[in-house]
Amino acid sequence: MASRREGPLMRGGAGGGAGQPLSRGSRIAAAVAVGVALGCVCAFLYPDGLLSRSSDAALHWPRQADSVACETSEGVTSLKSHVVLLERKNAEFRKQINELTMKLQLAGQGKDEVLYKAGPFGTVKAVRKNPTVIPDESINPRLAKILQQVAIKKELIVALANSNVREMLEMWFTNIKRVGISNYLIVALDDSTETFCKSKGVPFYRRDPDEGVDNIGKVGGNHAVSGLKFRILREFLQLGYSVLLSDIDIIFFQNPFDHLYRDADVESMSDGHDNRTAYGFNDVFDEPLMGWARYAHTMRIWVYNSGFFFIRPTIPSIELLDRVAGRLSREPKSWDQAVFNEELFFPSHPGYEGLHISKRTMDIYQFMNSKVLFKTVRKDANLRKLKPVIVHLNYHPDKSERMKAVIEFYVNGKQNALEHFPDGSE
Image 1 (cartoon, rainbow, N blue to C red):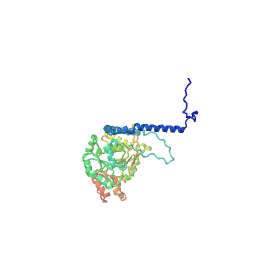
Image 2 (image 1 turned 90 degrees about the horizontal axis):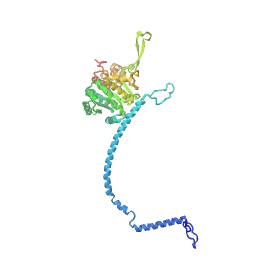
Image 3 (image 1 turned 180 degrees about the vertical axis):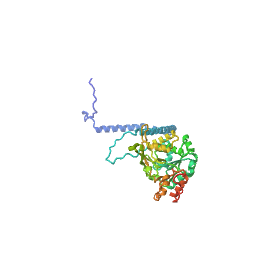
Image 4 (image 1 turned 45 degrees about the horizontal axis):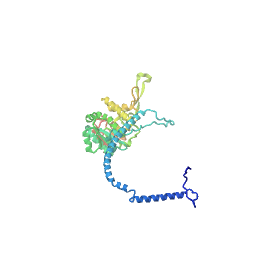
């Protein structure tokens, strides 16, 4: 049997002649015709339309939505609980990151991470300022909120006080207010001082209970309370704030923040009473028995006063606080000011690693101690015309009476207010 082969569609020619393929236009016309035919068939079979069943199903949607809403409400509650849990874990991770960052900063100190090329003679200067730490609000969120409200440009004055010094404390903050200083904070060490600060409307901070600190704060004398500041200030620095630490036997006459250089880790007032003792001098030691080598040159400087200093939030600054607080806890008979200066100035030597910290001495006529005032300034006609930033009654035990006299002299203009006091203490 002969095979059958299918060929392309053919159209008959006139008189049944041989077929020819359909043209492209004819095929499109045929497709349109088929589509119209199918449409007619569907219209006949489904007069209500193909989507009628879908519309009926949509009528049941509200009842289904009510069921889903209940399930969704439970799901939202579960999600909220999960979010809270994640936020807690996130806070823990942030704390760990800050701790690791601090450790990295410490580990990186002393390493030659960057190489510098020295410039021409006389143009080279070392870095004066250490970088500040990354603030870590997780260490004390309550204090962080207080500092956000009180500090100006991340700086504030801080004083520690208990009920033993209420009269001087009132003079202290009254003169701060008179000068127009608002960024100050009193660390209240007992209930009485907290109540007093509330009644006077002055900003204060009461630490969380700490038996070691609280016992000293409530009954400790001047030196004992003074030693607490090195432990308490650490949190302020960790939160990223620069602190101007102030004892309360200090009278303010100008805003100290207008007179700071901020080019060192620690900027402190001096116990020196003239340029040599305050800023350092070459003191020659004479030992005649040594003959030709009888003269030995020494460098001397009067100590920094640990009752008034500006400290920036840097790693060396925090290390200083840790060193001093650590020694005071191990050496209970030590004087905090002596330890403060030893850690600042003693160099590295066999068996001891010195603190690598930058420091600046404040101007002794702007940040004036009471020896400078009573021994020199009040007796000099030109120096009497100077208006200091602060006067610190650190050299005299009759603090309250002298503070009142200093206010009379500089604020009220009573020229003889200082005359009846001796240079020193009786």
